[in-house]
Length: 428
Image 1 (cartoon, rainbow, N blue to C red):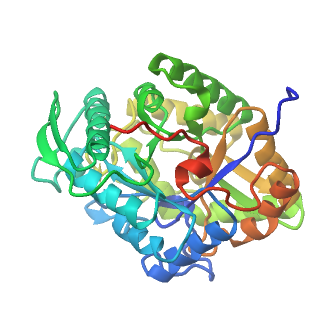
Image 2 (cartoon, one colour; image 1 turned 180 degrees about the horizontal axis):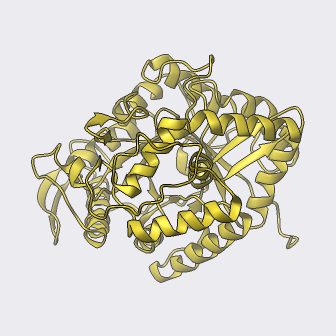
């Protein structure tokens, strides 16, 4: 520790709903689409004085062997629509929507986000994501396959143009760039925050540079204190090249947590949750994304397949392959051998996010340690239950963070920028 004042922790709540972070078999799980579920989680987050509520997005359901993936069939309502409704039942909580910069247009999105910022009196945020999936592009007239560099080039110009519209305050915008040639007048005055808060998800080289140049928050994922510190130092270092200060960008990894009466209870419960999240079918589906062949006859509780993956397979649609399947398979085999893991155990190992596991006091201490030692500025919590997955954290962990003097006991600002301690953008 440096003797400096205690850093304040920022907290956000991710609404669970798809993918293997959710446990639908738990008797406490409720609807993922009824408004009462969104309202419950958002009101719990606001009761806990969280900075913001975060909604992910999916523009197309993944398919496995021509059928909708069993974890995606649950669906996701359009995020800005949900957040506009939540603006009416919350008062201070920030409202963050994930919206794709590859398959939307700047004028239309700038208008929708400005509307949310006005309706919520300055609580809107935009999580900027990109997509390289031709599979997803099939849903759109323009189609859509952009390589990694082009995706971020388009996203950077997209954000600049959206900010031009927000700054124009009703004046005409004339923008001629490599990606967009637009003349238009936004039909709304400048948003209350000037610019809604911009969040960047992902930590590739291109993503880090994009975040340093344009984002207010970066949504990352790092599994250890040391990895978080390395990421934190690298991204904060990049800000100076864009004339920005370290506090102008908040680093908030997405994390899970499991509480118990004791640390031992929590670890036992965490193991049960992970096995519920990664059932046999999910383990096989994950494996097929790399192997590219039908593995429905493979034993998930046995070793990895002996045969090598099939490159360039299109067995699983809606998921971009992240690298050479032969190289990935070799790496997975090495991990399985080193740790003596079955197929399903390996998938559990590979898909686990940073988890804070223990009694409430243990988890509070772990969260505080990461922030005070510059591994993060805060966290986006990803509970495993819909919609009550945040209740125990707010009831048990938040008071302990407040006792430590590292988390607010009341909101002191009105807008999300004020909650996050972010500067207000100069007017246009």
